[in-house]
Length: 298
Image (cartoon, rainbow, N blue to C red; front, side, top):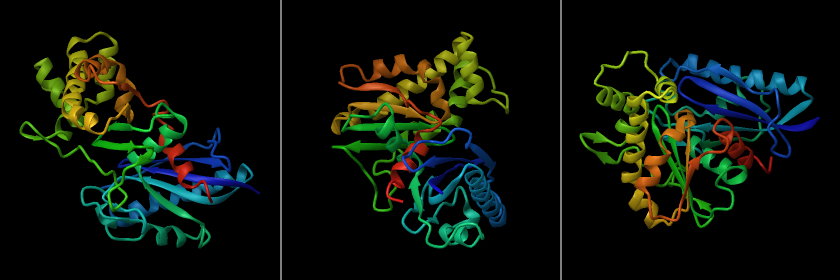
């Protein structure tokens, strides 16, 4: 059979997945998602993981592919060599449990099939280096905006890791005002900023996507919110970007689909620097491309 790879991007509410062929090309029609409750009990989390494996193998079989390797992107803290979650804010119910053993034990994956793990933001940057807007840049970085705030960078052509294979230079916990940077530029930060700027108490169901739609319709408070977040990010990253001579700064994550509303404030905040500032070329697929690179020898 054709050699295929199963790629999983494990988030707090969904596992997004697809297949790639032996050349690292994502296979059209193979994309799917499975609900994931990262705050759920162990059996709920494990069921979502094994359901995604089962569905991926089913799609592969119907498409004429065998699975030669499985790549999994997941946030940290995580033991990426051992495949062991070390998070207490998410996936706490499977803290310390080897996911690779759980995958082999589900009765679908042959023992010995390579199952490799990668930090989700590092995988996103790796994918953009391979096939996206960071291609050709030896010094690049990506800001991932979502429920949290992710950051990874590449210096002299090499992605920089911590000893646990997480990003070497996290920025989510940088001190800022009365809290940390993540409080002001992640999902909750956008909603908080919108409330301050608009003078309104945001509806409990308000999302950043909603704010993006309002910005698209010319809502001044929404536009100012994106501009304010861009200014905050620029001010907090400028010295680091200078010190590492970063020449390409990308923005990924679902919030970055509204990147155009932050662009002017980022350009202004980082003016005078020889740096390209843009969104990821493949916001939805970059993580999968990064996993393909991880599995290139399987």
